[in-house]
Image (tube, rainbow, N blue to C red; front, top):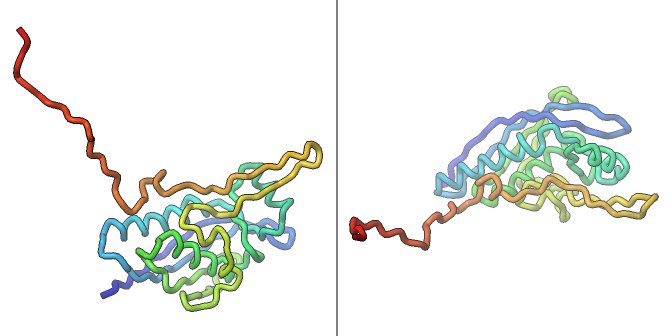
Length: 200
């Protein structure tokens, strides 16, 4: 029998669209089916969601991927830039979160429904379920990866010296946070023998 759970989250992020930068606070409700009997895997799946929202997206900036100059500007200043296939309206963020969070939980928790509201949208809430069309998120992109990435690698070329830079995308393996499904085997292959015999 599948267990049904829900949880609320909040995170703050910037949005750039129509030549404006605005700060926004997102309130999220996730409705999930638990698809694993392992309590450890359930906990890790939930911790992955928390980490992605609180560490990867918190204080990041949502930008449409075609805004190359803006992405380069923010990335070169050390900001976390989350690139989207469309302008970062709340309904796009809703579809993004449903897709990415299901990718990182890898079937242990399945987010079936999501509701997102924000300050910019005057707390109008957008809902999406797992059966809804994903629009631009049905195509290949970082949102289908099960890692911590929030954008695809960005290539930029300097006109002065023709150097191509690849900006970091925040991609980190879950092992770096001890959030892998299987525990590490700490069994040592070497053996220590204690004895009470003493050399005379």
